[in-house]
Length: 306
Image 1 (cartoon, rainbow, N blue to C red):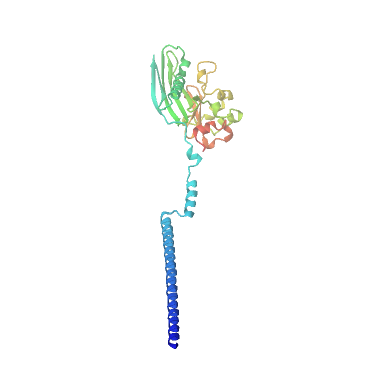
Image 2 (spheres, one colour; image 1 turned 60 degrees about the vertical axis):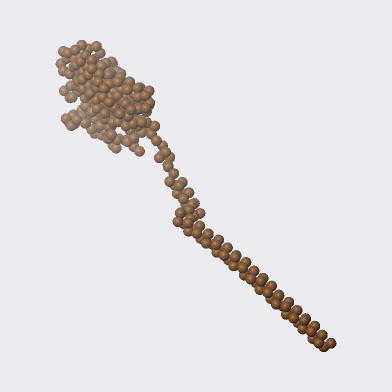
């Protein structure tokens, strides 16, 4: 009886120990699983952090972080072409060739435009230049024994504006002396039209006084001594009728002509043969009062004032 009781107690104790051992193994297994899970999470976190760090390093090396991207967008906007840079001149550059008209003792050199892609515009401008150069023949309408030689110089040329000076001499058989000739043609290239003094300046008593002052200086040093006397005889009507090539040889005949240079405006007046036939006077653009100009058209064409 006692042996059976002891055996039962021993069996119960053994079962109790086995159960405790099993629970401990389960606990160890659970702890091991928890450790493995934690290790996996730690490794995943480290991998994520390493990936993020690598991404940041790569972005910094490429200069493409979010802040830099924003700055780059701002820089791109700042570097966009301005309106002024986007604007291009509508006029093309062109070349000038010298042409010659020769007939019955008459020789006239005149310029012609080449190189424009707009052939209609080029033809219109060349017709104008040809006609202007040949208007001098109106002064010698049907004169017999005419000996006339005319050449030209370009005093101003740009894509917008052209100023041509013609000079030479004409002699009719039996005359006391040849005539010294000087006339000009100023052309607005864009609008294909001739520009006269009245288009450029305000022709009033104020301008007449300005012309007769020392602001307009004699181009020929030999005429400087009597420049004031020459200008004193000029009238406002003469200036208003200036550049009237169509009137040569008529009651509207004009011997007052305008030309432009890179630095100033010139006005030529007719004089006696003894005084040289004509006298030119110039005012520098920098010395010209703003109220002298008839608007901004000429100054814009000349591109003198930016």
